[in-house]
Image 1 (tube, rainbow, N blue to C red):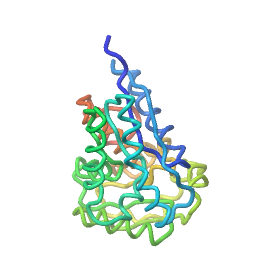
Image 2: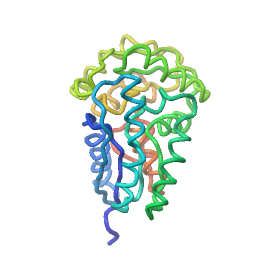
Image 3: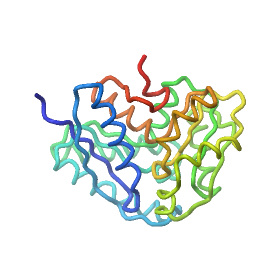
Image 4: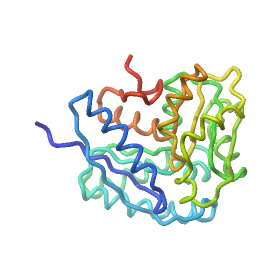
Length: 249
């Protein structure tokens, strides 16, 4: 039997959700498919979700890529969306290139991706032209995320932000509260709802429930990240009860 596949994430130091939801999805997949996974992280310091702290955190990403390369992981991803999207249009591609250079210099051939790029990929996989989203950020950062997504050719019809600057507090939010929150979101005529446009705001228990309630494909950044990881590993992109993007065809 092949050894377990190693999932590597570059994680903000105060993030607790990506190391919870990504393993939860892949463990659920293990119940129906043969591949097995282990999970490995390297951390960048960040406490408050402000543009200044995000910029400082991004500078630590290259060190983290080298550390994960040492573990000979099979796929490498950043685990912060707004840190990428707040840096300017298309910045996820620049980040992926820079991290790949470091990985290769440290003898890692793992594909390198970002959670920000994964959200864009996931939306395009679903054929989304018009979306609405929810995020925990302060309004100025939420607006940067909206503008970034729109620059990638996807219209954002509405965005609901909860204006929580403390990243630990974001991670403590009850994911099932999103089922009530989404009632305040304008979803008329949208192709996809993004239940969490933030990798730290928990949403996995709510995504399938929101999708079933609205009758609209629903994703999160964590779900899109999982899909992109499975695609890069060339595995069937299926996870039970994780919404349309990971549903059996």
